[in-house]
Image (cartoon, rainbow, N blue to C red; front, side, top):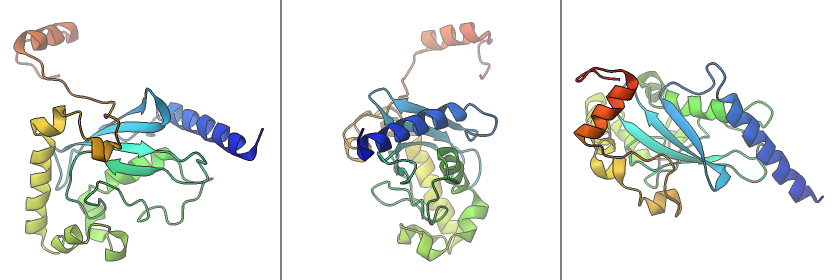
Length: 207
């Protein structure tokens, strides 16, 4: 077996083990739902429901792509949902360097990355960001005015809740040609009634 084949096998095994580990207590951040792509274990799709801070209420989709030499090399993260954030480029790339500089294969894991992403949307983290950590310099400059930044963050929240953001499968540029695995679907009142019935909920009760 060649070194490349060995590296690839190690990567697949590590990714599988780390996905299983997400089921452990506290490993997967609350509000995040993660699933590997059905076609490629090296691609994970995530939906993140933001519960607090400037972005409270946002529904954000992003994709994690692992290199074939993982864990020696870090994965990359790209947001499918457009969001105005100092650590997210206009193309959706998330800057891992603010938290993982340098990447340490024996210390850093995917659940560390997921928790760092969740942390990046909290006010206390945003307030401590430095200019050299940020790849969206415009968003970083707006951060100097809390009111202006809050307004733009709220716009991102509203955009993430829009029908085009929730139901559009065709984010080909940001998805790198492959639709996101976690898709929302519209349901009518009868379908909602059936769901509530299965969950044992009364009409008008929220799950």
